[in-house]
Length: 65
Figure 1 (tube, helix red, strand yellow):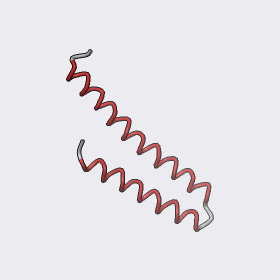
Figure 2: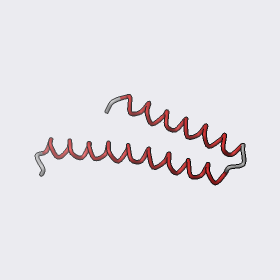
Figure 3: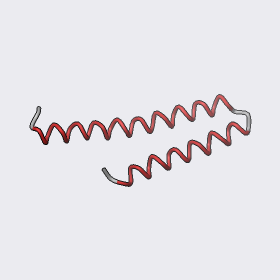
Figure 4: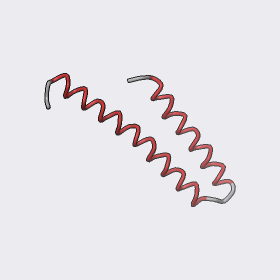
């Protein structure tokens, strides 16, 4: 696992948090919720891709097809 992935996920989290706080301060709670959900989907997509790569590596190591 590369350390840049951790930094990427942290940066996404920070950006989403700042955007949500700005939107909540300007009384746009509905849009802030949508932004939070979009951020969660992006992070989960990256995580699922990494888990898929992990399972592929495990299959390759043990020779399971």
